Each structure stands twice: as C-alpha cells, then as structure tokens.
Image (cartoon, rainbow, N blue to C red; front, top):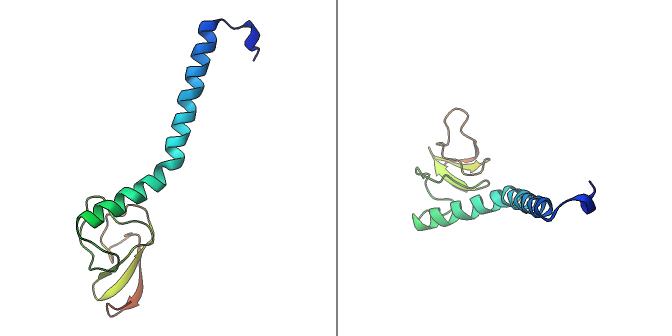
Length: 101
C-alpha cells in the first residue's frame, strides 16, 4: 500500500478504519476479564459467596467458582454459567460429596 499516492480523505478514512479495528480487537481481548468481573460483582450484589448453596443467577457463575448443590460441592468449568449443577451438560463438576469442601 503506497500511502504517498493517497488523498487526505483516503488517509483519514484509512486511519478511521484502523482505529475502529484496533478498538474492536481490544474489546474482544478484554471481554473475558470484563465478563468475569461483572459476574462476580453481580453475585456479590445478590449476597452470593463462593461455596454457598447454588441458586439461579441471571448473570451466571464465573469459571472456577464452587457452589453446593444436591449434597455435593461442584466447581464451575465455564464462564458466566447459568445452568444448574448436576443437570445434563451443565458445565459443573462435582468435587466432593456430602456438601463439605
């Protein structure tokens, strides 16, 4: 690409396109961290703490979170998981029986 042959208008449009693409890539790169942060903030606002009894949450549970359900402790394997532990393809793994950590 020869920039010297481009008009000011072409260069400005190219710069706008590059800026847009860089912003898009930054959003995509930062999305997992932001989702994790928002999920944890929303659970805290609901009064839910890691290791508590599982309850439905509109934002789900962060990856790695533990919750008690059906007399076992489960670890979540997916970001923003809204599925109930112990159900088919739920994304939770039982890590200890009896409800204790």
